[in-house]
Image 1 (cartoon, rainbow, N blue to C red):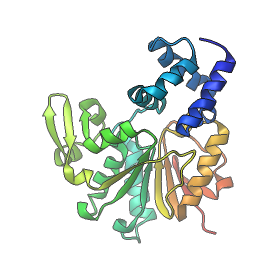
Image 2 (image 1 turned 90 degrees about the vertical axis):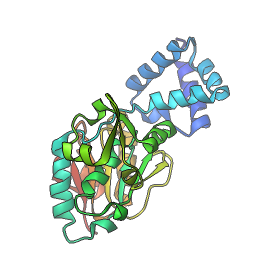
Image 3 (image 1 turned 45 degrees about the horizontal axis):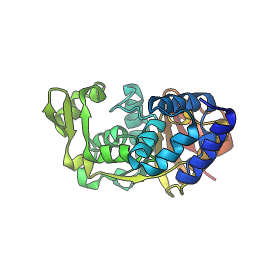
Image 4 (image 1 turned 135 degrees about the vertical axis):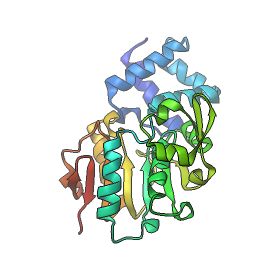
Length: 264
């Protein structure tokens, strides 16, 4: 591959094209991934790859999908979901009508996470009273989520009660989630580094995403999450993450991976 200047120019031109600022992602990790894809498609410079993306919407879609590192599973890290149900839904929000909770699954990838939330809520609410907002920067991932078809490996940690109740088997290795669960989730495209955040949320789930950003970008996102949450609202992060400076965003730690916005 060519020079440092070529890569810096690529980042600048890609921002003009997509409104995605690659400088806010961890440089070494992101550059390695991009270089691998550029070379796979036979380009010798980053900018020549970019020029081809401008002309080829399919290649652009491939790049966005590759960029966003979509790794998602239903009920990923089961102990955390047990805490989510027992500590957050049944204790923190015990005096609230769960159907009125505004829940945002941020960076939802292919939908495994927001659908998991809907299935958990269905233990306490009829499906027609459940509404979860799910957002991601990757339109291809969102479109896959809307279809709701998953390989069995994505369901390996899902409790059998959920699998039996909410999925139908398509073939030996493929399952489709029910239409009723799909109608519980509203999918939208959203860039965490550019777009407005939802207002007045009670619960934000953003798991295993912040690790890909620089400290500057993480602080920006955390500030915006705090602004998005109501007082006493809860942020649920992933098992690979830790927020050391949560107090500076007006939050307190209530369990490992769970942070609550303080009043005032």
